Length: 224
Ligand SMILES: [Zn+2]
Image (cartoon, rainbow, N blue to C red; front, side):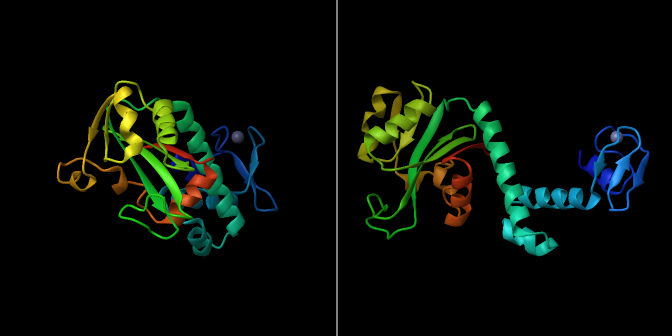
């Protein structure tokens, strides 16, 4: 696919029909003599560069600085890619099953208490990580048992094995599946992957916020 786009940028091959009879118009665009499709190789090149930056998770404003396109354009493209990924994953998303780790994490605000639970002005993210690598995360308004259990019931299969810490909101998990409480500090020691150690929960806030805002509060993705 990338080679195909590069050939189109060089004016070797039509990106639409693949024909090799292109001619250059006065305004710099190419026109295909077969299907009459017109395109700007510069624009196509910009798009390819932006997509490359996006795939490397380089922020949009860095992309803009590096190749001088407008921030609007880089930002718009990033938003478009995220929405497309979101829609794709939403379609593909099945409930998590098997062994699942659940945890919440907090961004912003002043940290109060050992884990920051109940602190004012914080944005709370609830996340679930399936053993095979599928993740579900969402912003939640609070960490009440009702809120968290609703998320779990909607996004995990009944009868799964749930690992959580001893936080009281997880108490009724035993009615929904097998509930195992663990000390989060031991996750790594056990060779298990802790959800807090994974994107987006433990990345910087701007990274996560940008994604949450562009993805209607939810992110579903698979760890590569
Ligand atoms: Zn063509």
